[in-house]
Length: 105
Image (cartoon, rainbow, N blue to C red; front, top):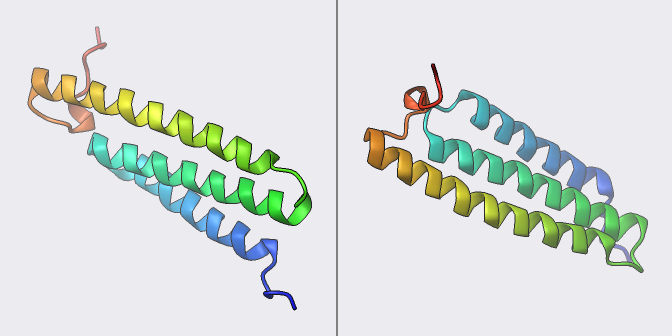
């Protein structure tokens, strides 16, 4: 007996998470909040990858493999992003994105 789930539920959840992530990344002034929003968008991508893999090609693991690559890139992004934020905080004393004008002429 089936569970009654279809891919549209996962796509709707993923779309909602992605839109929330885009809103957070574009509207927040705090660099850490923007990094969290980017992680939310990457999580939405992972949900899509795994859901489409389960419903379209359940005999392969391609979606899960790509999700692991996305998680790896997300971990590297968090490490590098937090290192940059900490360095700028030490230099400027703020993590406000309006204060990140180091490369302006």
